[in-house]
Image 1 (cartoon, rainbow, N blue to C red):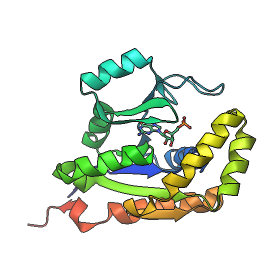
Image 2: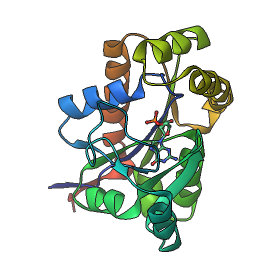
Image 3: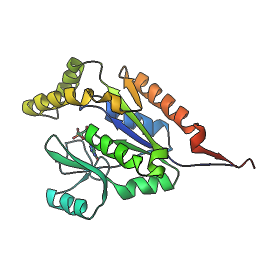
Image 4: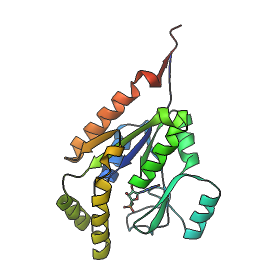
Amino acid sequence: MKSKEGLLVVLSSPSGGGKTTLCNRLTEADTNVVRSISCTTRPPRSAEVKDRDYHFLTPDDFEKRVARGEFLEHAQVHGHYYGTLRKTVEDLLAAGRDALLNIDVQGAATVCKLAKADPRLCRALVSVFLMPSSLQMLEQRLRRRGTDDEATIVRRLAEARNEMARWREYDYVIESGSMEEDYQRMQAILDAERNRSGRLNFETE
Ligand code: 5GP
């Protein structure tokens, strides 16, 4: 009686803003949500697993894929390339799954622009900005994580300030609290968005 298409959930937040934790919590709790695995030219961190956390590519391979039009969006973030594969997103949406994109503000802006010209993307898109409670908190998290050197932390904090200023470009803003609060707010957004009349198709005639 009811048919549904998947959501294209774009989630952005500065480094250390807690979005990876939120993505993990969400995909564990909600089996319809699947994280789109991005490509990157950044080297893997010690706990990261190839093709689970990212598809790790050489700059040459990344650029070839750009030329072949394989990316829905791509951007340079903190000196490395990152990109979302078009096929990953198309396959998830076609299967009725919700595709979760953990991408930066440039990537989110590209997806929003594409959606303006593409009715299917436009219908699927929900964008969320996870706003850190303060820059001090971000700094603490980056230091505690212990994965970045001092210069990287300083650069990421400077970029965080610019990213946070772009919160108005998103449909929703979650003011970050505890991990559980962030998750509950995100789940509430997804529950509401799944029930928008424009996204449902009841065969009532
Ligand atoms: P990290 O290196 O800390 O994993 O990620 C750095 C930044 O790149 C984060 O803001 C993350 O959301 C963003 N990012 C990860 N994957 C993609 C992607 O496919 N496209 C874009 N535009 N940004 C991405």
